[in-house]
Amino acid sequence: MQNFFLFLRKYYHLFLFIILELIALTALVKFNHYQNAVFYSTANEVSGYLYQKKSDALSYLSLKEENKRLLNNTAVFMNDSLDNHFMMFGTDSFLMNDTMKRPWFSFYAAEVINNTVHRKRNYLTINKGFAHGIEKHMGVISQDGVVGIVIDVSKNFALVMSVLHDQFQVSPEIAGSNYFGKLKWDGMDPRMANIDEISRYYPVEKGQRVVTSNFGSTKFPRNIPIGIVESVKKSTKKPFATIRVKLATDFGRVRSVYVIKNIFKQELQQLEERVEDE
Amino acid sequence: MNNIWIRTIFGGLLLLAFQILVVNGLDIDAHIHPQIYILLLLSLPVNLPHWISIITGFFVGYAVDWFSDTQGLHAATLTMLAYIRYGYLKAAIDKDQYIEGIRPVYGNVENVWYLVYVSIFSFIFHFILFILEDFTFNHFGDTLLKILYSSSLSVLLILLIQFTFNTKVNND
Image 1 (cartoon, rainbow over the protein chains, first blue to last red):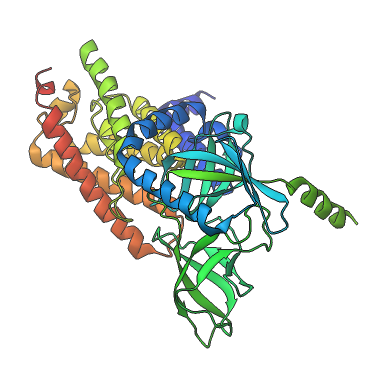
Image 2 (tube, chains in turn blue, brown):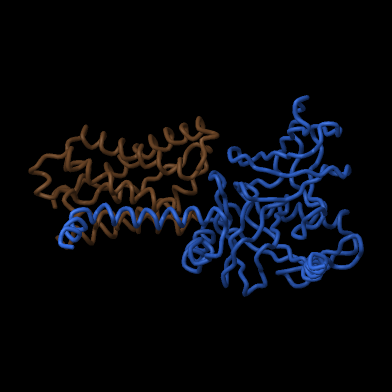
């Protein structure tokens, strides 16, 4: 027993080191299969507050650009896309009707207060939380296109998994063709992503638009832009073409976003669960 | 004595804020992510008990993780760095200086010694950090570039910080 204590005393640095290292590595590995720890992310109230302050201070720098973008956007709305079935409900959230002329999705406006693009797994922090109606698994878009999915919510902030994340999933569709595949970011260039699982026999060309499809996603409305086809590589050895897409959203400068609530999500889920039960 | 500790803690907090709010926001290239906050750990007194520097490493890393959604990544790396630093200092610094308990900062030690010290630890840190972050050897070339660019830039920034702010501390 005496020897055991001596042994511990002599090597306690090593044990301390191993224990702390294990704690950190466990956290690291757990976070890879994301997660339930809003306390330990930028969506917690402390770091959220800090980033909000930073964002407030810096937002003046991009006011001009933001203004221009908003004007452009208003013009687009007024011109064609949403002629009569677009309603404003206050300034903070609004409803958009789809072609059935019944509201299907409602939108919450939010502001990005922290954002990374150059990591392997990138996240955005936005300044709306469950106090404003944001829930987990909601889709997030900007005026330009798809941004990500909410993965964690605190009272006033939410953590969004960006498209630039190896676990992000959305099913894209080549606009107007019904060919859908799987979008994947390769972890290097924050402006580009790849689409897998579109057969090499489909005639996909450079310059075609890539949008969200209805297939397998209750998070995004149909036809939200994802990007533009930049190049198509076909090899006779592989059944699928490798399609490189230039992303519509400029992740480096995304500031204002909309969080999407699917009004029928519960109904859809209940239906699917009922089918699974039988 | 007291003065030095207050200055260390205050300076450390400033350095962390600088890392989190400014350096992490740098958007130069996918290969450049300098982590200059390791200066905080590197400047701890040489004869600080080993367990204190390990715990400091853990919590400072944890704090950075907290603000950048990389749970455990920086904590694991900085803890390891603290562990290695102890052995390195024991072997590489004079007995007298060790007993005196100087802080290994610019001006307190020889310039070449300092440059080697910062370069080695900056390289080790970025090496472990990016290997852990990528968790795969698929893009090893890119990872290696990232390690080289980021650690060199960190060394440069750390030296600049030391030249700027470390002129008076030497007299304490």
